[in-house]
Amino acid sequence: MAMASKKVAILVEDLYQVLEVWYPLLRLKEEGIAATLVGTGLKETYNSRDGYPAKIDKSINEVKASDFDGVIIPGGYAPDILRRYEKVVDFVRTMHASGKVVAAICHGGWLLVSAGIVKGRTATCFFAIKDDLIAAGAKYVDQEVAVDGKLITSRKPEDLPRFVREIIKAL
Image (cartoon, rainbow, N blue to C red):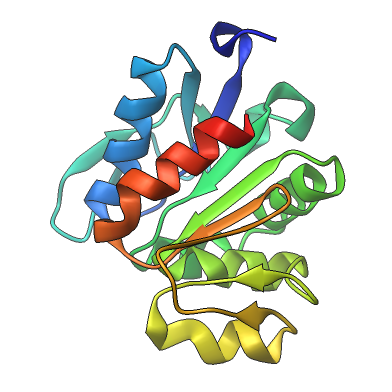
């Protein structure tokens, strides 16, 4: 299947980490992959921790896991908000259960924990939430990127080049 037919959802909410949304979005577009910003549906535009706006393409109420080949969960504090919405948690859980790419960076691991998909899986994250992943049963590793099947995790913005390369490879 050509990259032009691939579709990836990037989840956004207020307080997202700006590089962790925009770098993957632009890199996927460069590869011809359709990247869709998906929000919780409370509004059309969400602001990063620094106030940089991200206008969503769709709300979680307008999409289903079968519409996409993968999902990216950026960090910042947005994942703590995203995990409060059962439709978002179900979306991530269904993507994982369907064998699709599920990628999380930084605090994005919080949503993986809420979706219940890290038990027995190798994963990394921002060091401040490693205890959460470990408590949820993940095999935590402190490295640039961890690839466990279609589950791809990374620690911080500096890891974005390798993180996104692994996402593209997995697609």
